[in-house]
Image 1 (spheres, rainbow, N blue to C red):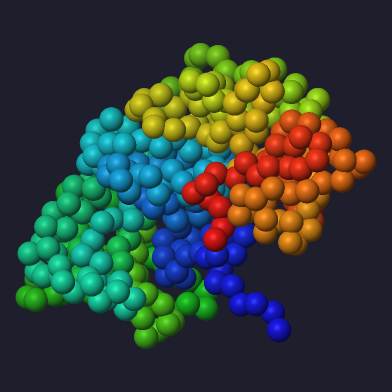
Image 2: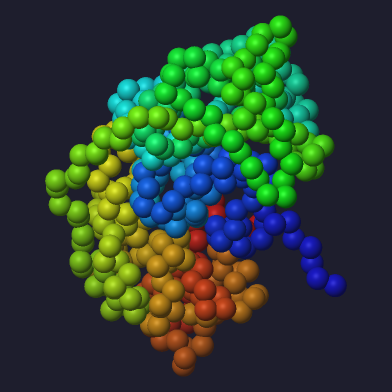
Length: 393
């Protein structure tokens, strides 16, 4: 009988090879429909489920600006971004309502998964009821209106913006969209269709207040229709003439000695790095798309993915980096079996046969030819370099 393991504790989730997300929560990004090499804004990014979903659909190209005001919530965002191996992100820490004034007409697509009263999460957590109330709904609606105005200003003419919440309160949904339509005549609501998924129209009247008839194009997802959490989603575009962005006039940083070391030590194909920026931040080297590297309009808390850092002229690669870029490894690696993988992910040492493994220093651990992390070998055993907080129980 096979042992049952919750997906959240499975090694594929611990390594960032898969990400667990509620079905309805994935719909806003599907509606946003980001494309490779676009410039995209996630205005309220933490904890990063939609951020990483956007990056995946973009194929980790272009620029994805992920904004999060709350520094405590940013910790989870940064962890998920790193675990999923994003190289196209620039993480910023700014009040969402300010971004539209700084980067007006800048983004091809904007996602606003707005903070809300979270009525939809009552299904899985009754604790929401303790802070639920009409005053909280009114407060959230005030915040949401400022965020949607900022997001719309940041959107390029002809671009796509998606506004979503996990609440069913009309004041936070249709009422916010009605506010946008009145404030910006150039705004337009686009219809939403999702194959094999039931959605309902937005409501045009609530408690004696009428909304613009176009809010009927909004989508309501109710729990009884698809056995999911409820969600509200609106797809918006902006009419107008596109203006060209100013191009980056500086030099894309590229540290060739890092690539040379990876090639000589591990046999990693250097060609795959040609179209990236490779740069140093303090004592750590990073890799990012050129678009992410050249994003300088707002100070970023983080750009790209850690490659690693040098210790006594030897580069210690980052575990998440090798999962993405070490698929061509053919030197100084160790293929593990199931029971050895469990030991490695727990942070334990792996015994090796010195006759078949005499290399000392950092080595890449592979499982079924898939790079999974980094260890340090003394020729007799390999010590796991998995971060303590990322080890499995």
